[in-house]
Image (cartoon, rainbow, N blue to C red; front, side, top):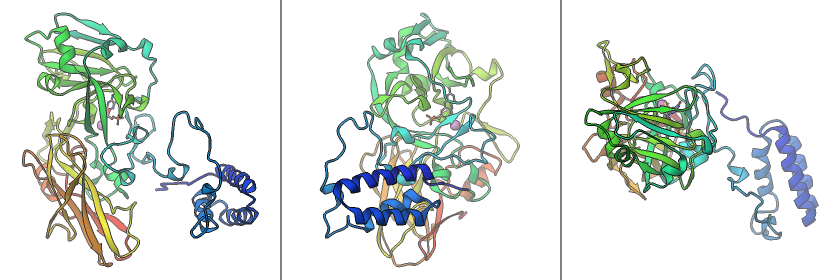
Length: 443
Ligand SMILES: Nc1nc2c(c(=O)[nH]1)N[C@H]1C(S)=C(S)[C@@H](COP(=O)(O)O)O[C@H]1N2
Ligand SMILES: [Mo]
């Protein structure tokens, strides 16, 4: 798989021009020449990645005063909507070309290896579409609530924003996360083994608030949530969940939902399968039974060895993964390193994370860093001194219900290998003597 075709020739030329102009301003002719030569040298093979390094290698390192300390910077409003440094362009969503037949009913993965803390920046939240991304005019947006209710209603976006709002940090995970690993290690990086995962601060109205407004009839036991995109994705949510912590969301990490995440309104069912978190939410219909019993719609189930299917596996069970080191983040020198990763449970708080360096023979307790919140990503870390010995790295989470993350062997015993969904098994990385990291499985 070709992960990165770095920067194109054009971009490299633009970068060079910029460096040229800046150098001229400073009268740094020598450096400019040097860069020009270097660029020709590196031509066509990842030029931009080389250029910044080349710059640094010239006159910007101590004891010299770097160019950026001797010139004025760009004015305010250079980027009216800010964006990351051009040197961070490798931090991006990625697809796996062979995974889906087209790129409309498809998925991109979050670069977990590059993130810090627990919040996923909006531009890096993984995307999952059944019928592509839609861009909806908020003036033409409506949410209809009907079915077994006393006062069916159609809300505008402004109407929704007048209700008391909540803001909560919750993870969102597609149940297919890790699904390619049921039969054996397959994906080449943590972005692909675990990147159908994000964690945002979501703001919106509790679904319970809206349901109180319309008045649910006593026979109303299920809520059908339907999306406005062409896929018409619809999921039936049990009334208990709808009245518990479900949120009708219009903001994400402080700003309006991104189109990728269902602008202007989506449903968030904290801790539950991502597919229940219907984007571009158009309609909520209260019924007395799950929707698929009334009409054909697709269902998310797990095919078991017995030939039977497990259904209503709504909760994303306790999980964890080491994000550094990882195939994308090898170790390059001997000495101290911080092993870091993420743990999460759809049942609530992460209580405890263990890290093993020897494939699960012995375990050490990891630290939980920063915010530890229910149904949110939780960051763990452990300092490790590496002297070049090979390691078999694993992490194992325990949540507040006492649920211990299972091994892939335990999970296969219970579910076989025909499932796509709900592989929350302990993940293993093999760190070799050269510091490179590889996806392996230990049962
Ligand atoms: N309307 C609609 N909602 C949808 C989908 C979709 O295709 N259409 N995909 C679902 C699936 S399968 C997942 S995993 C999550 C992904 O949310 P994200 O794209 O914000 O990461 O959205 C869910 N909601
Ligand atoms: Mo999904």
